Amino acid sequence: MKDQTWSAPETEIFETIRRAQNSDSQAVMAHIVGVEGNAYRRPGAKMVVLENRVGVGNITAGCLEGEVIDTASKVMETGVPVIQTYNLMQDRDDMWGLGIGCNGIIDILIEQIDSSHKPVIDAIDSGHSISVITVISGDVPIGTKAYYTLNNGMVLSQNFPVWLANEVESEAFSSTKTGKSISLEIITSSGRAKVFIDGILPTPKILIIGSGNDVSPVVEVAKLNGFRVAIVSFRKGIKIDEKFPSADEFYNTSPASIAIDISMDSNTSAVIMTHNFIDDRISLEALINTPIDYIGLLGPQKRFEEMLSEFKSEGLDFSTEELARIYSPIGLDIGGGSPYQIATSIVSEILSIYHNRVPGHLKNRKGHIHER
Image 1 (cartoon, rainbow, N blue to C red):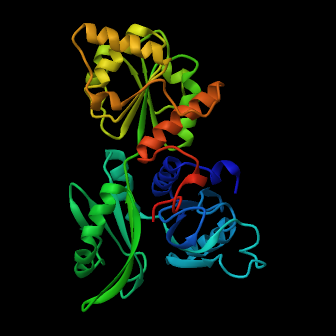
Image 2 (tube, one colour):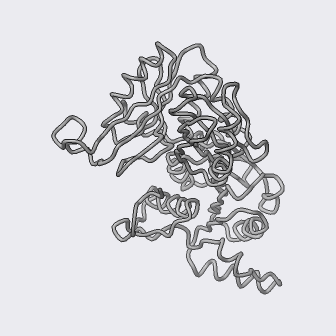
Image 3 (cartoon, one colour):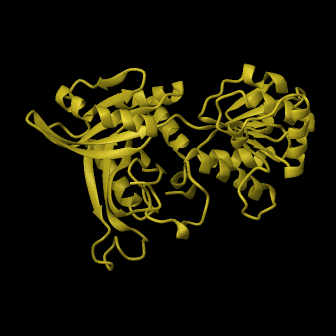
């Protein structure tokens, strides 16, 4: 696998699935449905394998991708999904154990991409979360699917049994809310099955307000980390779609009209970097009345304090809850000062808020790195 395809963000993986559905060529998806012990990726990690044996995305640090691509080629021939189990806890001198940095048992579902994946793409396009419930063993054929959305509840494919849907509905609801993925063993008088519930949240968006040269590194780092990026410019003379070609959305508006012209929700983060005190100030006032949880303001602490003082003199005094959503100076304290280091600091802070984490060294974290 090429480095670019191995490290593809989840947004590119779903876009690859979309292209596969709309083409005549075949493609297969491999995703982790179970991990016992330690592994580089957790349940829900995905990789798409194309007809030319190119893999997009990763499920390990690179040690299993070649084996998975071989199995994916067989699935393309038969159309029959399979579960492959790789035991990386065995003899450290065998082909799996030596030096790979993992020490776990990984279950991987490998299945053909077909119309059963369309509900996921539709949910992503509409900005809704979804859980995909896939049978991975038991009395029901492997690969049989159901879907859960907050708007429509449980939607069953033709072969998904009602008794199984009733048993997994509460967990599907939870996964749809949180984006977590889990495997469940269901045993009832009606039958038994093991299912994998894959919670998929809407793609998070970063709204960058500004069109200076320092915006480009933030766009690039954000895209590599799986964000959808929207650029807002107050300067109509700049062709922002040409200046920032890797961004996804483009808006020319005024600071006071941001919340009117642009749709925002709690899945949106905003970064204000116009370098103009008045534009920043009006933008901040407009954004504080939106549901977004993160408003980053570029500039030193003294500048922000001056801004707050002017707000207060005009009768606008931010509440404690509102101030908690404003991050200025913006970014994590990682010590770097180059454009890409600043961009990394900004996007890292947004990621910590998005994942509800307090930034710190992993060596000081108690328990597992990933939630289980």
